[in-house]
Length: 308
Image (cartoon, rainbow, N blue to C red; front, side):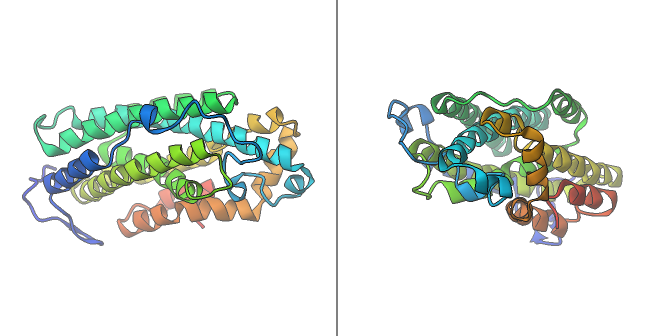
């Protein structure tokens, strides 16, 4: 189904904005509020003693019995490893996103503002991935790749993903981390470098979220029924994979904890479940409003733990 950009489109949220006008606004914002992390952040400054690498309330074991037995030093060390794990996940996800964006614009007019903004976003994601990699190195923790199974599942997903599926997965990866980072960058308990990294990411990701939301709305209005149904299923499966991969369990081993005990306590933690659902709520509310969370797809989202 082909729909001209000049056609009036409407969904449950109201009239859709013109694709080119949205892109022009995002390009203007990019010109005014983009950052070079290599020069914006002080990478040579020493890390600060006694500071967290992630707000303690967002660390996976927070408020569990195991957490209460850990020393402050061990808790902060776990925050360092979890920050590295999340940054590693972010790099993995952004590499997938860049491939999906290139596929999206492959057959679109190269001089359009929509394509120019997609290329601008790809440039942003390249800088973000390099920034996350430098943050991991600076913190001294190892990288934490996703499991081989999830790595290969993502290879399949990005190969078969339809356009609405690509933008749904984009929002899944961006909005939960964005919620956490909005709590991180103003938190003076956290390392200055980490706060700087999250501030840059929040500012630039706001544009990416707007672009993805507008395009997903358009796709869910114009795509054929089979594609909408496939998108509901693929986004639900992506939510399940994402929630499992969110923190690599190797972090617990690397701070001297019993991995099985730690994983079990995280799964049983009401606080952790609330954190993840709060982080996803803005996204799941949006997806529900545009008809994404239906049938088997909704059940997959519930099984991921991201939807109450």
